[in-house]
Length: 108
Image (tube, rainbow, N blue to C red):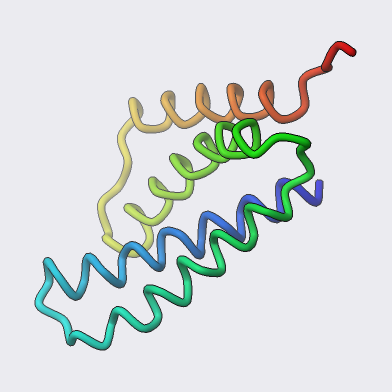
């Protein structure tokens, strides 16, 4: 379960960091939005190194499913745009894939 919590923390940090740049560059917010953006993106990278995986590529691949779900949650809660049924179906598929990659039995 530590990996799940770490992935959730990483997703929050990445989305917040990217949104800070989005706000600055696309929504006309102050240049200083880059400061929390860089901070959050640094935290994101740090958290991904804490994932319980022997290989970075596997940790990153599994994270992709978590990121998709977190992005849809951001869409809903921050941007006030309700995901549709296809967003939900896609998110479930991605979480199943992420869990398979991260927790699947390994040979050797």
